[in-house]
Structures are given as C-alpha cells and as structure tokens.
Image 1: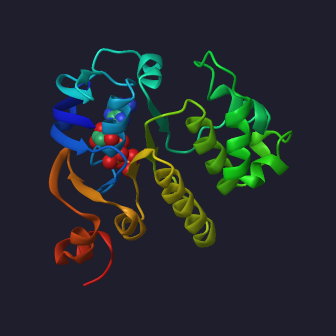
Image 2: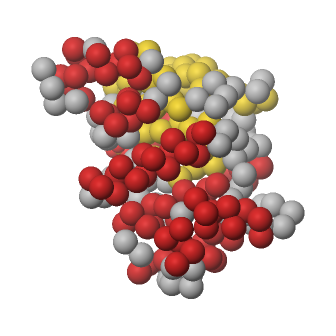
Length: 233
Ligand code: ATP
C-alpha cells in the first residue's frame, strides 16, 4: 500500500499542496480529480521524487520514500507516465520501450514481447521514430515505457488529454487491463466521468487539499461532484 500522510509542497512561495493524505491500496485503481492547478500533478511528482516536499511522508509498504532519488523510487516499484507523454521523439518506438527498463539488470526481451502483445500497434511501429506516432500511440508508448520498469504502482498524469473519444476509450481499456494484471494504478484525469467509472477509490483535490473521497461510484452519484466535474445537474 502507498500511503501519503500530511504532505506539504511549495514552489518558491506558492503552497501547491497543503496537507494531503491519500491511501492507495494494492491492486486498486485510485483516481484523483480536481480543477487545473489543484495540485494533482505535484502530488504525483512528489511520489516520484521529482519535487521535494516541505513536510509529510510518502510510504510504500511502510518504507519512507521522501528523500529518495527518482531512480531509487522506480527501483522500489513506482513508475510515472508524465503529463504530455514526453516520449523521446527522435528515438524509435523500440528504443523508447527499452529506455523504460534502463534500471533493470535482467533481460528485457520477455517484457518487450509483453508490451507488443498489450499494444500491438507498437509492434507494427517498432522502427518508427516516436515523434511520428499519433497522440494515442505516443500515449501507449509512454505507458509501455513506464511498465518496462515492472512497477507495482503506475501513476498516470492525464493520459487521455487531447485524444479523440475513441482513442480515450482504448486508453481506459488499457488501464483496466494493466490493473487486471496486478498493477496498482494512481490516475489523474480531466475526464472525471470515465475515471470515476473505473476507479475503486477516488479523491477530489481543490487548491492543494483533499476535499472529498469515496468509491468511484459514490463520487459519480454525488450531486456536487456531478455539477462541478461532470457537467451534469
Ligand atoms: P494541472 O491539471 O493544470 O496540471 P494540477 O492539479 O496537476 O493541475 P499542479 O500542476 O500540481 O496542479 O499545480 C499546483 C499549483 O502549483 C498551481 O498553482 C501551479 O501553478 C503551481 N506550480 C506547479 N508547478 C510549478 C512550478 N514548476 N513552479 C511554480 N509553480 C508551480
């Protein structure tokens, strides 16, 4: 279980996270929803070791992660799929996939094959430069790259952003499949409707704080949430 307790993070004088506590139980899909600037990305970046919290703890199975380097955190079993995908545009699909396994000392061959069966389109595009892929394909590549570190937990920052509705559905199917294969998912989504539908547990963030939590179904049924995030009354 990943446990974030009373996390505070600031950028210069801006207090982006103001006492966030979250629980991400093993093998669940947990989603974080909230408006732009609420602090969702900062939460994930803190877990990944990319920003240093002012205070609070981030524990994985009882082990403190705060203070560990991003590489150490990947080695502990947590991978991040960043917002905007950030694939290496001038490298091939295969090279991008291999980079995801760069901290591993064992052979990558079996997992490369696994990625090709999870994402057949990437096999077809194996030798293509990643920059020439469509947005949806780049997103799949970013997910495959993260999975190559064999994470226990995959964190995804806005995976559906900017993608056509049909592709968004593919991405959500893949998230469900990855979870079915035993990987815990921590998901940030603008598409609150779809995210809440697949979530075991959900948290709402507003201006650096958690303002509500519950099962995905509970939040989907909540009138305030429907009005604020689902565009329904
Ligand atoms: P978005 O969906 O827009 O990414 P978010 O909920 O993920 O929003 P964050 O990106 O975590 O929110 O931002 C939280 C706050 O921290 C915002 O006020 C943002 O402007 C600020 N912030 C984020 N990154 C930085 C940075 N590198 N330097 C300064 N301020 C930042």
